[in-house]
Length: 135
Image (cartoon, rainbow, N blue to C red; front, top):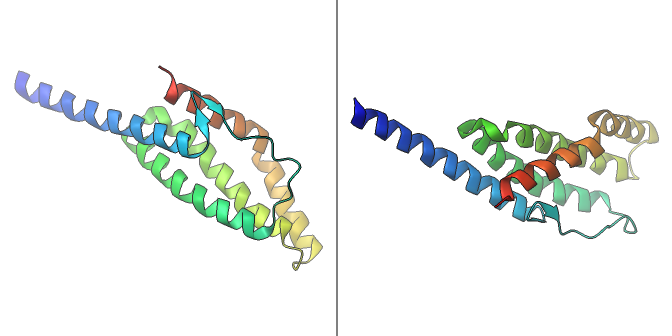
C-alpha cells in the first residue's frame, strides 16, 4: 500500500508541476514577467479587425493550454475562465472594428464585450499570472 500511495502522490505532483510550468509559460507568452505585464500602454494605437483576429487566434491557443492545465490542477480554473472570457472579447472586437459590418451588429458586439467585464477579467489574469510566477 505504501508503494502505491507513493506512486499516486508522485503522479499527482508530476501533473501539478506540469500544469504550473504550462501556466507560467502561458503567462510569459502573454507578456507577464514576475507577475507584471511588460506590455506598454497601446491605447494610442487603433487596432484593425485583422489585428484583433490575429490576437484572438493566439489567445485561443493560450486559453486551450491553460484550460488543460486547469483540468490537471484546479488552482488554475480561475485563470482558465478569465482567459476564455478574454479571448471571447477579442473575437467580438473583430466585429466591433470591422467597418464593413452594419453599425447595429458592431454595437451588439460591443455590448457583449461590456457584459464580459474586460477590466475585471484583465485583473484576474494579472493576479493569476502573478501567483503562477511568484518565487
